[in-house]
Length: 263
Image 1 (tube, one colour):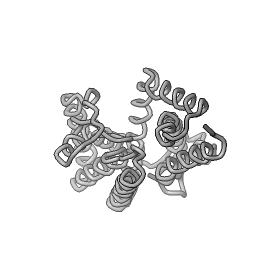
Image 2 (spheres, one colour; image 1 turned 120 degrees about the vertical axis):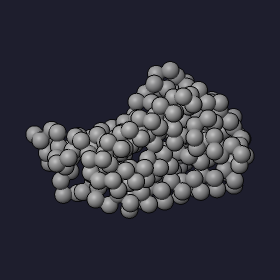
Image 3 (spheres, helix red, strand yellow; image 1 turned 90 degrees about the vertical axis):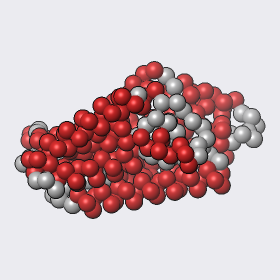
Image 4 (cartoon, one colour; image 1 turned 90 degrees about the horizontal axis):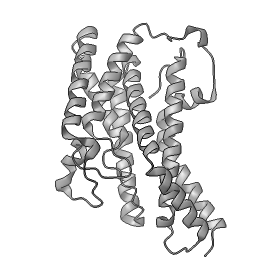
């Protein structure tokens, strides 16, 4: 999820950082909602208030709409970044490894601590599949590859809408027979769920945009080249921040609860 460090593209770092900050705030609200569930033995008005605030934010209509906005932005930027890298297959392996690690780690946490944080097919899984599809398209050459990715991406998105992934029923416990539905988008499950249809398609469309808009690997805002800001710094290390932000947020909330919250 990083470009070359020699010639950074300002707007991509900025937008990637913005998407990550929005994602962190979204996950913080969800963690607040889950906090009373993580400490069921505590009967505290502070804990209840935090949980109610997190629930109000997490399930509000404006948050639902905003979620689709920054999730789409995140997926598009992943595709654009894939178009700019010279090591596409290495990138695919890195993202796949990170996705597998998150799934294994969250499943392990639920097995031992029952925190309800399992992620079976999250955003990194969808990005890994999307980048893999882009890699296949790239084998057909620069021009054919980018248009192939666009056509494939649109097809995947249309299939997602035909499956009505946005209205998929939410399961709170699943078996192996449900795994295909979770991946394809007919069953909603997990703390982070980004089904192949349509999410991998958005990555493919981003790949096309990257090959088209950044064919010369130069910023579309040349006057801002070399400029730095806080969001740009965040955007440069998006993969590491994504991997570490949730353990940090959850850890800080748990530490706060153990120190300051009493029955």
